[in-house]
View 1: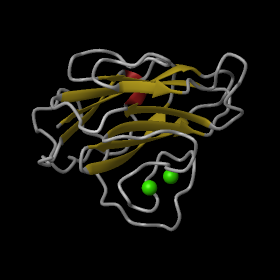
View 2 (view 1 turned 90 degrees about the vertical axis):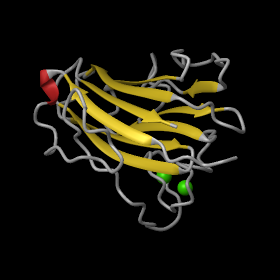
View 3 (view 1 turned 90 degrees about the horizontal axis):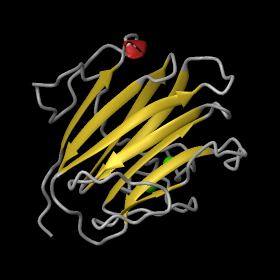
View 4 (view 1 turned 30 degrees about the horizontal axis):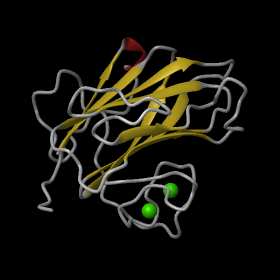
Length: 191
Ligand SMILES: [Ca+2]
Ligand SMILES: [Ca+2]
């Protein structure tokens, strides 16, 4: 497979996120963003063995949270957060514009695992949502990832969410901060 570097474009919508870290352009990001690019694409720095449920490729092998009971593929998006009762949602659409939902395999191969914290706190405080491509080769086009704070669930803001993305040959890691419900972070990755 010929590898093509994806473009990453990340921006914030919603006033609740106005205190996000100072905008910095991500490497490869388009400059015509409709909102501020809020986080740097960071070079992977191996920090030891892979740790689970942190949405980070700790060992820099290109795979996020492998060996942790979640699946992966040539495209993967992961969010993880510590506030046990806060309801955060990861919504990913494939290049066809189809939304990955838990338990439904899209025609592109995209599928969502885990919906946390779950109605009965099934995630037991290990809040992690994973969307991955169950296919050998990733369809080309733009993948859109939206992270939303649905409900504080009694937790005190800010809610800090780690967001990891693997799109073809590249991985990305971002730290998101939510100060109020309905705050939204959007990211687009073009492969
Ligand atoms: Ca890894
Ligand atoms: Ca990890």
